[in-house]
Length: 200
Ligand code: MN3
Image (cartoon, rainbow, N blue to C red):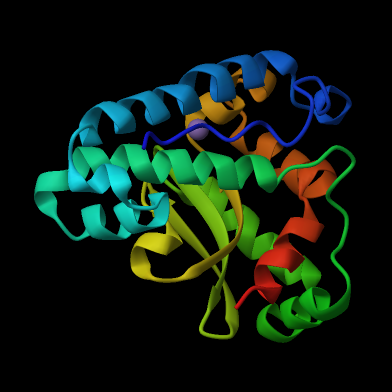
């Protein structure tokens, strides 16, 4: 069974009032993300991996140096779907409930979390991702290079930001810090983060 590309969870124009143009999604979703799906399907065609879940393919291929190409494409399929779900129109602001309490406890306040997340996203040299993860009951911020993700390391992802240049060049040109600030101010889907935290 072939892997498929999940639909965008919002209209392609929905984030235009919040700093991300439809053109960004025409390329980032319509071309970059789709290409990872197509490449993955070509790489696993006729192999046992084609019958595994995407999560299983990521964890198996990460540990096998002969499957680097499979890992890169499978992880990028998963990372981008997770990134779209991390965004929503009129998002951002502050989380509430258990999630807010966990952030206060583990980071020493929401502003400290924002500072740590912004710093991770800004300092990932070259291509990669910034993440909020649940590491065995403690919330942490991490950054990963290229396609690498928390799932590969057996950790639970809660939120991500794509900091590959293709993620921000149309809307913010070279200004990665402005893209990061806009994400935190107007786009983070805290409901998605809270759902992930509540999952076993
Ligand atoms: Mn990307």
